[in-house]
Image 1 (tube, helix red, strand yellow):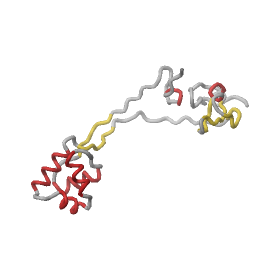
Image 2 (cartoon, rainbow, N blue to C red):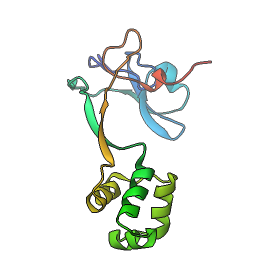
Image 3 (cartoon, one colour):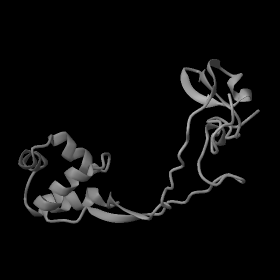
Length: 154
């Protein structure tokens, strides 16, 4: 069907070749002739223009996380205020069983609930963690992953 646009890669193996629209295990994708043999060909070589998108390199991010000793902090602050778990739950409009699970460490509060607890009990439950994104592309790859990068071939 003519010359393929530059950058057309098989979504399974990453090979640059004419691509077929195929259905493999219920998923439609663009695949080379070899990979297309694993599924049902829906359309012969796909000819579409591909405009490469230049992505900025991944940035380090700071994400809010709950401190590891949240259970002890919540219990100590509640007891310091002279409140029962039931009273604290009622004040925060939460279930008493949830307060019990948090104080025993079997349930980590979501960020929104941790913020409510911080404000009401005047404690620090949320800290910022630095998340560093490391992108290790397979040898010979420069831009993107394909399904083939994640599949072990037998």
